[in-house]
Image 1: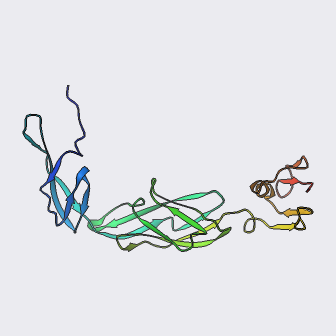
Image 2: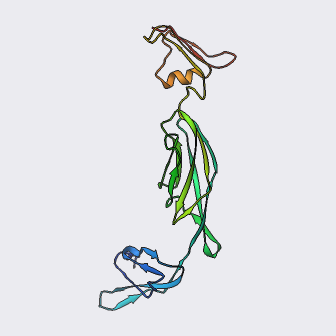
Image 3: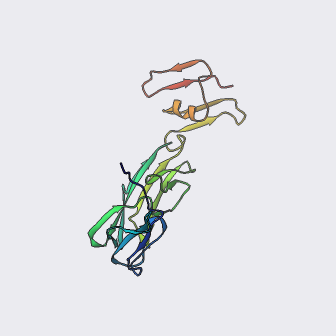
Length: 210
């Protein structure tokens, strides 16, 4: 009983109009200009004969516009947001081009966008918080603007911090709710052995600051 074998890497490609598209090793198609052409794969069998495939059509389309969604992104600590990048081509066709665009982020300290690996992912940068914008680009086409706001630390934008530790580790550190989350993020613990779970405004560690 016969089986199927992938011959993509060993066949020759012919018949295509190279002014429109070229077909390289491994079946990689590179478009050169707008239009349509056909190509055929061929190889030699075990008795020296040539086997040729049925013609395959190659349509080379022009990228007309790019749309990124969502266009407004808000991320918190440790969060990320998947972006979908849709390319609109000539002949009224469209497709997801998330993995092939490049990104221009106005302030990469606030947010970064990783390319590839299933799409485009926006995550927080190194700045504590802020807002920035980004656009996706491909083939000289620029997308709509994506507005990004990020909070990369619990201190400041999310809660208030009043540090009266006298600069030498003594004294008191006051934070408003959610103080448990913030103190955990800077390595805090219930050093006094007391943890209050029920208060009108949230959970708190009760400290004996030493």
